[in-house]
Image (tube, rainbow, N blue to C red; front, side):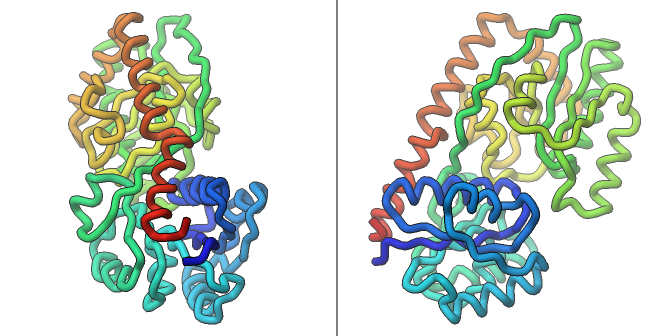
Length: 346
């Protein structure tokens, strides 16, 4: 097999899958492969980040429909790919290159609805089809698990000096990420402990349709006086600002990258039991709420804020060690090495 790899992006803007593409590109290059990236152009998007890291890039149309067509034509003409193995980092590039044998297909989201038959067709002839968790693999047959990994996230948490606990949410402010449930839980906490909790709601509604945005905004409105909305924050700034992160997803998460980032940063956090979140945190994570249950989420948040300093330190040490063992760049590079060796790319 060739020692060249071209990663095809699913989106031009940076989402979880695109962050993982950048990690994969850097790790594959570190393992000795020649790596390039192709994808839809977007300002300050995945191609700009890849190029800044020294990877050759091919820029195609930012329009989804045109990108599908241009990527298909580029692939059939072998563009700049030559004999490189094509790594389809999502369903979009996999669908565009349907019929191309010998690809790697990497699905970061579970195909639902009409995407299910499309995914079955798009993955035919692939060297392997990857998913980011055992939870997702149980729902998507004939797949292999490649856990994601994260950069180190050094952060110094500030102590709550005024008695107010700053809760933090980082990600798309959408109902499927649990924002509506979190707003209800915050309202309950305010009734039970007036003035004790605030919420830092960090993130932008990329990839969220207008109806879902409206649902989220309607849920936030009754507690808007308790919510700070800085827009997008980088991870370090987020974890340095909050006392307790909350990741209350309602849908079955395919992985839970932000939970792994919190573990790296030694930041305490609450999760829901949706999808792969408990798989990432491990069975000993103490603060897990039932997905979609605002009352239970409020209860778990209150429990987490009552933890003693000794309990919190012991948990954070264990979480950081789990991150280092399973989700650090070294751990991810080792998994990628094993995969590429199995595929005879190394």
